[in-house]
Image (cartoon, rainbow, N blue to C red; front, side, top):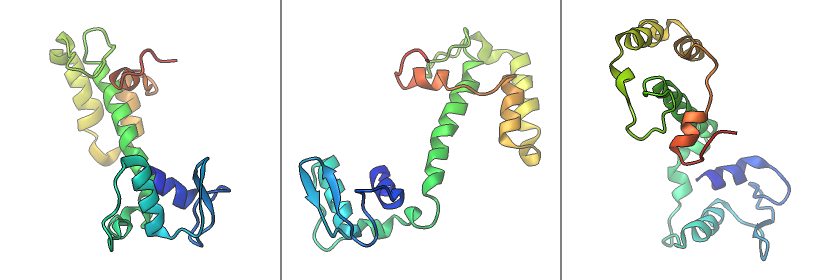
Length: 155
């Protein structure tokens, strides 16, 4: 889905366009005049090894890409970054790897009260970023998230 979305919306030379512009999906293969279904079919075959059943149009059922929600998908990833960063405060050493490593701080009444005061009590009366920074006591960082997905130590 991401590659499909990128190709439809990127507008960079050599990518798909609604007019069916030529596109090289692989350095050795050139496709020209692709419509939406053909583009989906080529990408599905390239990335999954499967072919679309004849007469189907899966792009028509994934309306998120055409209604302006496409960029919002990246918000889910940022939610992961922020949640891991918050959870890292509850781990024993403040270095959560996201794999059930909650230490004694998980039951720390002061930290729990801080979470309640900074996140739960204000609700929608403050912006999410402001509440997050107040709880963390700093700007959010991706370190705990990167450890959780196996990217090792942060840069």
